[in-house]
Every structure is written in C-alpha cells, then in structure tokens.
Image (cartoon, rainbow, N blue to C red; front, side, top):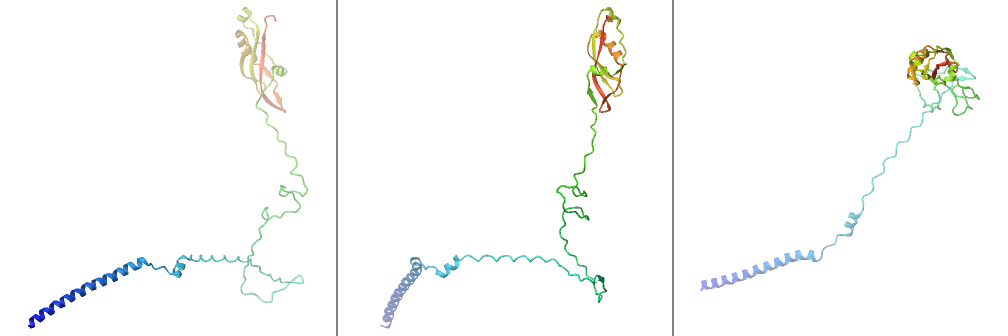
Length: 242
C-alpha cells in the first residue's frame, strides 16, 4: 500500500514539473521577443542637447600675433662743450666711450662726395656752369674720302699729263682697218693706269691701244683736298687719214 502511494505521488510530481518547464520557456520567450520588438516599434530619439553638440561648428583658430613694432632710430643728444664760442674742458672724464651710429638719410642721386647746385635743368652736364648752353659746338669730323669714284673720260682728259700716241699695227693698216678702241681703266692716287681692259673696238687695234695707254700719266684727282682713285673710260682713235 505504501508503494502504491509513492508511485502515484511520483507521477503527479513529474506531471507538474513538466508544466512548469513549459510555462518558463513561454515566459522567457515572450520577454526576449518584447526586448527585441519594442526598440524597433518605438525607437528612442536622440536628445536635443546631443544634437546641438554635434551640429555646432568648431571655433575659428586664433589670429596670428601682431608683428613687433619697428625700432625707432636712436637719436643721441650731443652735449656741446662750447660755452660763449669757447671750448671748455669737461667736468669729468667718462670711464667708457661709446660709439653711436645714426642711420644715414638716403642721399640724392649724384656723385659720392660732391654736392650739387640748385637751379639746374634736367639732363644737364655734371660740373657744368649754371645757365650755360650744352657742351658747345661739337667737333667737326671730317668724312673719310671714298676709295674710288667714277669720273667721265672728258673730265679726266683735262688731267692728262703724259699721252703716248699708239703705234698703228701694220696688218691693220694694210687691211685698211680704223676705228675707236674704248678701254676701262683705274687711275690711281698717283696718276698711273691700273686694271686696264678692253670694252669695245676693232680686235686688230686693241693691243696697240692698251700698250699706248699703259704709259699715260694723269694728275691725281682731288676730292675735298685728298687724292682718290678714279674709275674712267679711255678712248683711243685710230684713223688712217691722219
């Protein structure tokens, strides 16, 4: 009888324990679901104070310090030792002698060590006389004479000093050839013939004309008082009649 009571009691205990376990799981699951779903359904807004803190811009950086003021020039007051235009001895001898350099004022444009004079004109000459006019007339520079000039044969005919008559070639005389041989020549500063060559004329008479003209002499042609070389033509006439 006692064993039956134990068996019946044991069965009831197991049944109640099973119910309690199921109820515990349901409660725990409900609480966990509530903890997950409530923040999603009712999200918490950030406090206004926190939002204001996040949106406020940082303060600007402090301005740079002002530059130091420029140093004022040192002006030393020199105590004159003159009394009634007479030099007096100092009352005491200083222990140390300090050398004081004052900033020199910017000097006007000019030559160092020289003082200018008022009343001058812009663009004047250094060391000139006040009221003077320029540097005076410029020295006359004599133009260099040209090396060579062209002069007509008629003008040079008047400067001819020595004229050698040409020898009439015998073959030309026998062939009755006559005419004028034109030669181009340079008359040097000394009046001699240079660079002689034929321009035109009968071929049988050309050599005789050149041989005669090479010995001709002219008076030097002067230009501004100086002798110059002259480029000219020389005409040599061959005539059987004379």
